[in-house]
Amino acid sequence: MIARVPVRTASLIGVPTDVGASARGASMGPEALRVAGIREAILHRGMQVIDRGNLSGPANPCGLRNGGYRHLQEVIEWNRSLHDAVLAELASNRLPIVLGGDHSIGIGSISAVARHCRERGRKLRVLWLDAHADFNTAAISPSGNLHGMPVACLCGFGPPELVAIGGGMPAIRPEWLRLVGVRSVDAEEARFVHEQGLEVFDMRCIDEIGMRETMSQALAGIDGQTHLHVSFDVDFLDPQIAPGVGTTVMGGPSWREAQLCMEMIADTGQLGSLDIVELNPALDVRNQTAAFAVELIESLLGKATLVRRRAMGRRHARGPAKSPELSRVQRIDHPDAGLFEVGPVAGCHFQPMDEGRGSHHAVLDRL
Ligand SMILES: [Mn+2]
Image 1 (cartoon, rainbow, N blue to C red):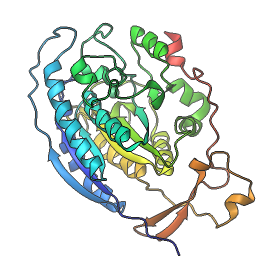
Image 2 (tube, rainbow, N blue to C red; image 1 turned 30 degrees about the vertical axis):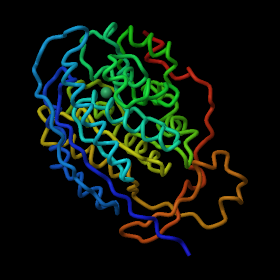
Image 3 (tube, helix red, strand yellow; image 1 turned 120 degrees about the vertical axis):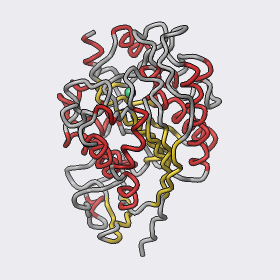
Image 4 (cartoon, rainbow, N blue to C red; image 1 turned 90 degrees about the vertical axis):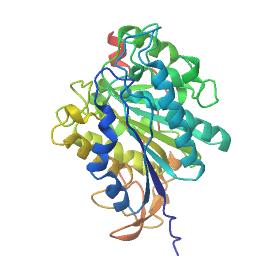
């Protein structure tokens, strides 16, 4: 008898701000995602949803760079509110889904996730899906825009009010991060990425080994004790399919590659929190980028064209799995099809990761 999987509850937290960005408009992102049906999409996955509405915070002063940063005080205020909101949802065992907002809000969101993991003794893995490395500091940033600095702030390089927002100094360690889809890095930033040993799967890597192998490496080592946070910058996607972002970069993942990326994350069963950021409705075409993002979130939460079945007992007939934590069978209560046991099928199992670092840094190496 298969036990029913408890229904999970997701919390939507809107963060309507663009104080960390250069282009205005990401402040309208939360409402565009709601209009595109994010709540209904999550409900359709068999989860419950609580929409917490939008946080409030300071307006965009459209100011100039001051002391290395643009709008530092405003970014701090938004991130403090978001940190508290995310921490409260995690404490109630809900899955926070943060609707941005520009990517500077990743600081408050992930600082809260890291604090939660520290307090619960959970491992943390952060997947940063982005065209950019977001690893600038005031000293090396060409613009001073804080949406280019959240990864650095989370790793301890930034203004103390942001670095210490979640109580840990720093909030996360570089080895907990995987950056996927990167194709635009400033020259000084690239040097800093190397110096800190960030694990980057850039577009050349995805071209060369494919999205499947990229994701199996980026997800390697995740087990039942891992909290997986996904920070999804919509500029990760190719601008031909996702024009509604302020900092488009050509040559991103295609529709199919993005779907596979999300489906493989879902297969881990460990998604614990999510940010969707940089959606800019002022630059979108009939809300298509928001609608596409919502479709990807459905895949991230486990939607598949066909539920993959496997017969009981077949798993061991092929010998012990090399990455048992990733190839385990999960039980899913599918809203349409009932209870299933699902897991990687033959020929689609995760490959063990070659732990060697530094082999996929083409964008960075060329600079
Ligand atoms: Mn970003």
